[in-house]
Image (cartoon, rainbow, N blue to C red; front, side, top):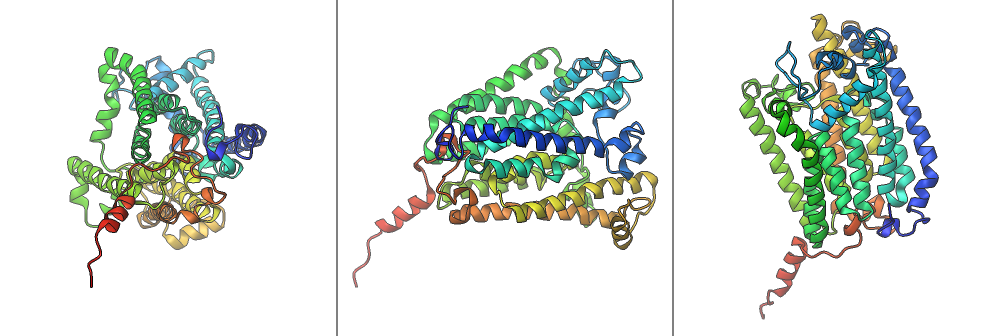
Length: 476
């Protein structure tokens, strides 16, 4: 990608592609090492064919192995085109690019024997996801400009990547999104849009990132770049989705129907609230959707106001991170691996270690909390209280019989509060740009592409200032 902007001025400068080329072997090696550790973390469960009791006790659950069988891939069923029985879900319930990724792995393991294909499917998928993790790290480092080493290391060495990389297929969308941000930073809006469209075809959440692009392009008057990124996004999404929509409509819409109709799931703040006075509200799916969507829209409106009133135009990753947090906090589903969605944007938005470490600790607490709570639910035991849980953890062991619901609620709130606190710090940096580490060396927005160093065309703060200065001073 060509160098661009104040953060990437020269190909061999402090923040240019030349620097990333020199860092790539280190970042690739460290990411691969962490991915291997993540694979080893799942080994106790893999050796037991991912028996549910083993996966919850050892906190090494994955969707990849069981869904190979439950979604009919072992029987040669093609996602979206072939239905399956045995549950309320009749087709693969992921956007089409994720289903295509699953099908690719299923094709790759066909040479294996029938009894070996399930584990081969898991291992092949892990290998592909590890490659995507490397891509995400390198793309994030590229978009960081002069802070490429710091941001790359923060993503590559994060506990979140180690623990959650192989729970599901989320790294596909994460890598594509990171590439889209990198392409935008290189002033390639059409390519950025195409990559973002592919990311949306893999997961829904990248669609939300168009909002910050629109807001910042409007403030900077970058209409042409905005049009190109939107056109690229639409074209890539349609290219992937339309064939499935035309020939497998029922399978294509399964993801959207399932997302609309599902109720409160583990990890959501509503899971906590339903046990604290909101059970009637959260039990009705329509009301739940309205409450979650309404809260997100209010938060998104606040972010829009922030985008136009901040003393200096916010950096693109800052707004992207805030919008994604605004979507996740009131969501009815918040799976453990969703931390991967936030990870690249979080380090680009605020590459400071103290708050990042606190956030990662919150994610670690929740990661073990959800699996040990599911252990108590599946075993139908009351689970350990906080004191017994802490004793087991200090002994480097899992609580026998899992943890109680009260302890799980504490783990849920630990993640919720740490994510909220990190978002608050990002807002603080937006309001006080002098404290923004990414701007401390005189850079504007290394990931901003055409926004980097651009002049404001629309700013409510400037408008208010001009309005106040135009008011005549009354004579005494």
